[in-house]
Amino acid sequence: MASEAKADVEAEVEVVHVGQEPPESWAAAVYLCGPTPTDPAEPSWRPDAVAALRSAWSGAGRLVVFLPEPVSGGGYPAYADQIAWEEDAMRRSDVILFWIPRDMARLPGLVSNIKWGSWCDSGRAVLGAPPEAERMAYLLHFADALGVPVERTLTGAAGAALRAVGPGSVRSGGERAVPLTVWRTEPFRTWYAACREVGNQLLDARVEWYAPAAGPDGAAAWLLTVTVAPGGGGGPATGRLLAAQGQGMLM
Image 1 (cartoon, one colour):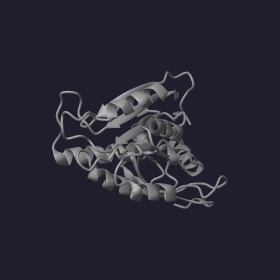
Image 2 (image 1 turned 45 degrees about the vertical axis):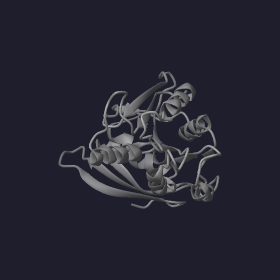
Image 3 (image 1 turned 90 degrees about the horizontal axis):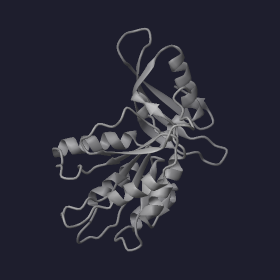
Image 4 (image 1 turned 135 degrees about the horizontal axis):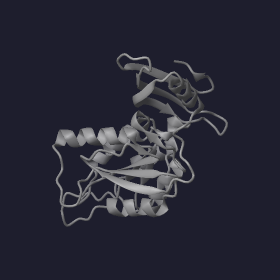
């Protein structure tokens, strides 16, 4: 595929804060999800997570790290805009890295529970929490049941996120909305090669459902909504692609 990562592309890490537009292309994208301190005296954990990702990233191309916090000295957008930015960034990310150092008195992380419930079975979650984190049994139970990687240090969680993305794969424009879990599958690659061959352009995509491979010889299953601009002209068209385990593309 023409947009595959090349080995001679220098690795780089770009941080995208809430309200900012992401770059036009990247090889991998990680979203840092977890409680944000409301007390200015309480330091955020996210700079340390960025540092861990930056030091360990060796993929061929740009790693984008989405932070739902403003730049230093900046302010948060309106609440509805904050939520919209977060949801869009998460759906475009290859990995949602959850770090939940829950302390019910100062860092309860209640919104993080909602986010975890939305993404724990996406095939893209990594769960990190220090051993002393409070009220994590329920989250840890489902992480185990769903095969979500669990780490007890922030550095370990960053490492798990990068193991999940591997070397990454360069995507631009609408391709950025196709996470690596789908991008790397044979049904998607076959469909996309045919799409490009006739001059169609992928404008956007959304994973509606995902099921990991049942075993080492199995294949992931997924349902993807795509928006495509026809190469022959005309307005964008929206369609749905279904890849069923062991049956290839069905729609």
